[in-house]
Image (cartoon, rainbow, N blue to C red; front, side, top):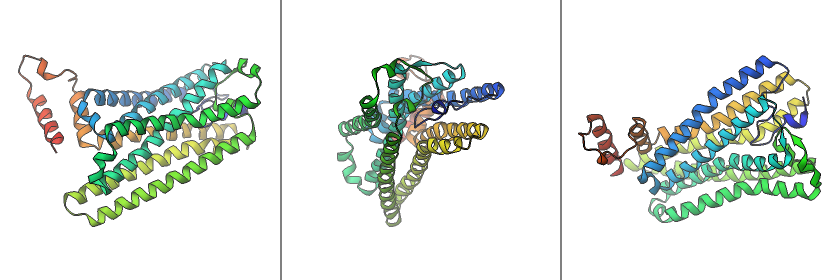
Length: 338
């Protein structure tokens, strides 16, 4: 196995399924398809519900949630294409691989950055409820999302600029089995990337500790409905912390895999790589639908309504509305009016 093509960094899955055993290659690739596609379809369905339900677009938390659905769906789709391309041993020109790696790495960072913004949104909603409407206006929410997308692309673009400073033009005409290592051709470059990641991790942990600690204090002091809202926000924050934890391990896993690969145990390396792919690439992105898709009452009601194939406004129909549709509409109106 080629060591350079089997290692990956944040957003690459090349080498995850390759080995000398063709049976294992077939099985792991097939299992990946079975696991990945349901989450892609769930994310796309939830995104469609968000777009169809205009009232969800008026609240910052749902706007931010929609961005995670969009980024995760594209990331999983491109990741799955990478899995299939590696399965068929497909190589591409370096000039095509480099932009793809930049997009993949940026998409891998969007969700954690958005989740961090969602934590701050919950902090403001619970600890500063009177200022929440002024701080997270629709215009400011869009501005926050734009900044997050730009910041997510900044790190891979910096890696590209550094690469261009010491790589000859002929480098981009080579054929490669695409992985993020094509942007990291020097040891000091990879070390610098790791140091930047550590600084970002420390910054994220500080924000999470501050937000969660503040929400806990509010939950203890509150009473009645305010206490219930604070407790629910506290549980949501815990799920956000869990999701960010898995996203963190996703970024750390390539360095662990590199150490295992140094042991020259290819079978162990493939097992660890496959586990990392399922646990950190897939599972970490499966928590988002759990947090806001199924735990949130308003969004869950909209999901149930549209899951019953009711994608057309009932006001356009002349026949009598069925009883089950009336029930869902009444429940929706009650939630929205709260």
